[in-house]
Amino acid sequence: MSGKDESVVSKNALMGTKSGKKILRQGLFKSKGYKQFNQYKEEFDSSFPEFAKRFTDNLLEQIKSDSSPNSTQQKFGDEVGSTEIILDASQIDPIKSKLESFEVLNDRVLRILNSNFVKMTFPVFNALFDASTEYFQDEKDPKLREDVVDGHVIAIDLSEPMDRIVDKDEDLDFLDDYKLMNPYILNLAREKIAKGGDKVLKEFENGFKDARIGQYLDTKLKEKPTSITENELDESYKKYRSVMGTAGKNMALAREPLGEIFFTGMAKAAEAVGCGNEIEDTIRDKFVKIPSWPLYYSLTKNNVKQGFDLTMEKSESYLTDARKALDKLPKNFSHREFLEFLFLTVEHYSEFWFKKLQKANIWSELTSNLPK
Image (cartoon, rainbow, N blue to C red; front, side, top):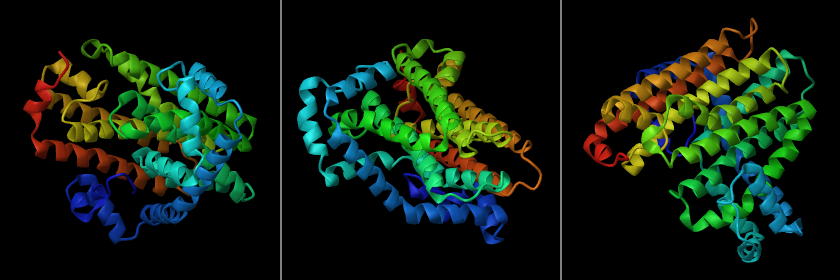
């Protein structure tokens, strides 16, 4: 398991949750799921620096070769429906010039790659791609695997700079750099995903469109935090499930029956992680994130502690749905145990942060910081 905070997977942390103890037990007895998971984690650890360099090199090439960066910014702003995440024309040249240094650009790339969603899902995509290759008896194609996995990781990574620009809660000195980078990140993701074929690219575009709807609604809900409905919040969660679910489907090159099963499993697991992430952010920021399930439940119940109890129930519900998807897998599916182990790590992630929040005992501070 990988993430921004490695303390989540320390032995002490794993001993502190029910799911963590199951993880340790599987590690002790070297279960099939544990061994598969460890194999892909080790591959990720060893190949990540090479991926980050490849990402930076490709991005640098796009930035340097763009003769009309202002048009690129405008087009991106139109596509995502926001002028808040693009640069004014007068800002472009000095920032473009700065980012034409590999060292500077690589620093920014590493910053946005320092993300739970990226670090937790990169090994998973490789595993799903391999499982699909085996199931469909495809000829192994390492370059296709690299392109399709890279493309979806890069697409998911795009949410990091966009969220930081909108939320203004991280990397404040680099937000303008991210604004310049965003269109090129999306272009690069599309180029790589397209190597999987027209159907794969079409699935990505549909998922990206749904994710933009979720992200747009997420932004609008910040303006009316005390009147958010359950349906609106569920719709905003498209920002998690659409991109991640589509990535899962495309690891099977959008072929059934695996495509739909991977979509559901990854989408629901992503929503469960989203709940855990909201709890983690609450501990860091000392206020309940807007919008979020903890905020919705806290205001509905007029009790912050109950709000987080219900958020954990929501996370568990998402994970139950993810696990149900495994029942639809073909018989003797090669990576079933891997996925079971994966969902165990997702469960531990949310449990860990929930226990840490309870121990922090900041309920009165969170209550006083609720939107009025």
